[in-house]
Amino acid sequence: MAMKYWAINSSKDENDTITYIRKLYKKYPIPQYVKIILIEEGHISLGTPYVLILDTLKNYKKKRMDLFEVIVHEQYHWYAGLYSFVKKYKYYKEWRKEIIKKYGTDWSFKKYSSTKEDLYDSIGQHIMVCFLTYRFVKKYKSTILDKADPYYEFEKMIRENYDDVEKDVKRMMPLPRI
View (cartoon, rainbow, N blue to C red):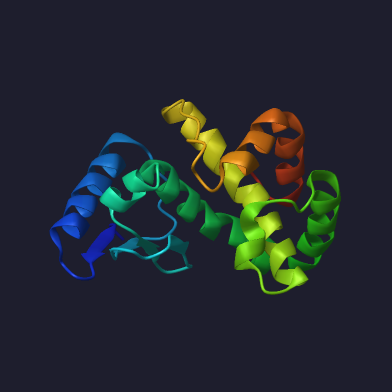
């Protein structure tokens, strides 16, 4: 199935964002686990098993976030979710405890977590997703997140502990080819 794109409000910014994303997909081998991308101005980035919902390029630039990285990150949520929640859930819960003990919980995910269990799931998921995103982006763009990006400190921890994080992620799932 080919990628499908929708501009929710059909605004110029939403349509410009779709044009930009199409160019990114032509230029880079971005993962395509989820084949539908919705653009809605002001929406928080969200990856689900069926659809990615993204804000406009203009708003990502205001937030000093790289839309390329956001798309890769949200696509990898699907892949990480497959292994953590579908194929290896019992193992994931144990793995997640070890990861939290090793890397801590002092990350920005607390604001999105209503319970301790939500927080632990968010950290476990983001160790996998941010590692895969960093690995992919490093190969194709050689960029590092802007300090204003909400994942900056988390990605910095991954960069500083790359070999250990890679081993930990490989225990949970096979690394996708990039």
